[in-house]
Length: 320
Image (cartoon, rainbow, N blue to C red; front, side):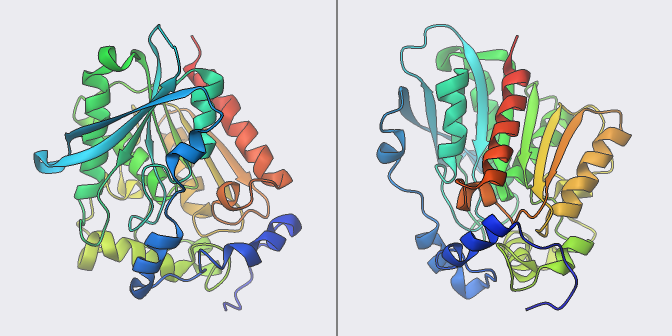
């Protein structure tokens, strides 16, 4: 365990870490990828949707290189008029998880805000290295935009959202949409986003063998995606958005992160870069928060505050 000084965990969150460690070890090395794919698999979506007035449809679309990928569309049951649309990208360090990982949190946007959610089954590293994950996600974004009328999505209310590695991929989608003249976006939700492959921030060095997703885990994820290119000069900003040198012309961003996790400093730097470029960003740094505490300890006061604050921003951005 690291002896480097670091922020303490919130006492209520710290109590939950002992439970988290059984399914999500602090340090993930390549030999644990298979275990993580089992332990981090989402529960059956039918169970997650039970009791919610949400209708699901499944679609096979063309992903990177035109190869098939799966997306799920979840919309309010009985919704007749076009609704805001959200392309959602799941977490899992680029190596595990599925399109419904963490979905229970964003399903409230369907239930309570009337949005249509497009959940992407992007292909995972290391079997599918860069650019597969990001280009699969971008293909889903383009599909959502080009089939918006059939899906009942408003063209003027299309947003991207993701958590952790999904947050990084969502930021990459926003960059690519700007640079490629792609779909116009009304917002981007970047929850504790995985943005920087270089591992040079102070917060990256503060968390070794402690919390959720430590420095070694981060190196494992980026190496799975980028191989020997990790940390080098030839990494695309669509894969690692912290590499972007131009953050102008991007949609409003909501960024939240824990103060006691490795992504703290890169999330703050990304918000600062957006502001410096004249953009709109709302940043929340949650004291004592470990990585993804809203997923692993949703009952805590800090997590409920995080979710409530995020939902309020999404409601504002999706409103007329």
